[in-house]
Image 1: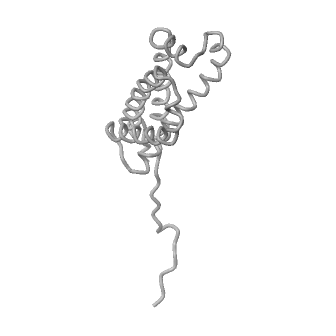
Image 2 (image 1 turned 30 degrees about the vertical axis):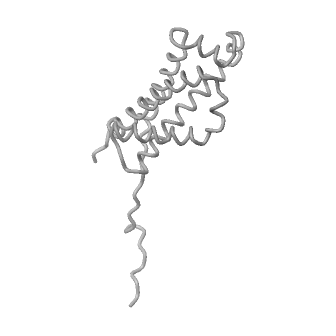
Length: 153
């Protein structure tokens, strides 16, 4: 008995789709949250004292820091969206869980350097990290396929 020939049209490929608009919204929200969190109104002075920088030194690196932080926020939001797509999940709870999983993995891989960081710096950044996990997870998970217009033909 001979097997039927393979026909490409019969193969079902299950694609994992990432919706870009929720990712960009989540990354923007995380970046703005960081800008507020590290502003002069909240923790800038304490943060600068913890890492040992003065305002003049910060002015020299602010452009690079803003660009790098925006890239990290975007990369993190895409990572959460990718985890949701791979696991075929959506919703605020799943988004927050995937966000926490990704953040925990990143922290665990860099654990060797954490004890050397100043305590105040760790406290400030831990607060920002928790808010970012909740924000990115809720936006990416909650809006996972809500902001996409489907074409009907």
